Length: 116
Image (cartoon, rainbow, N blue to C red; front, side):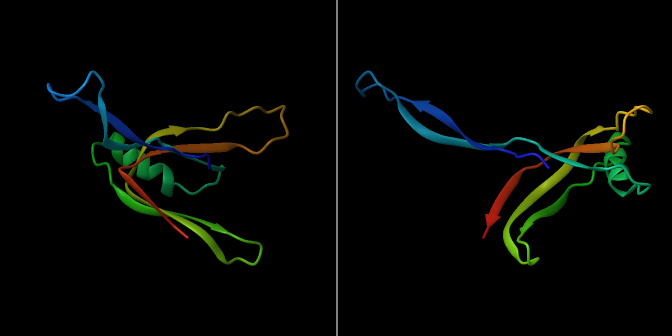
């Protein structure tokens, strides 16, 4: 998984009677995509979620990413709402390389809440 970002847009505002400077108000929150990576397997579950979008039936899901410590206890959780896959990246196969084939899925979402 790669990091993702959150941003609150800035709305510039000035009333006609204000001095010659602008006020800065908070605007819309936007969230950058989340990129998940995993070793290629025979499971098609994640790919089929992406393919549903190609077929015109994108399914939005609420998902959680949980950071655990060495004892397996939850340390932090990010709850991601309205998530759907927007990009699938197939493994780069190289018969001469001694590496694991990696798949990736870019997930677009509407909101995130960090808990813990």
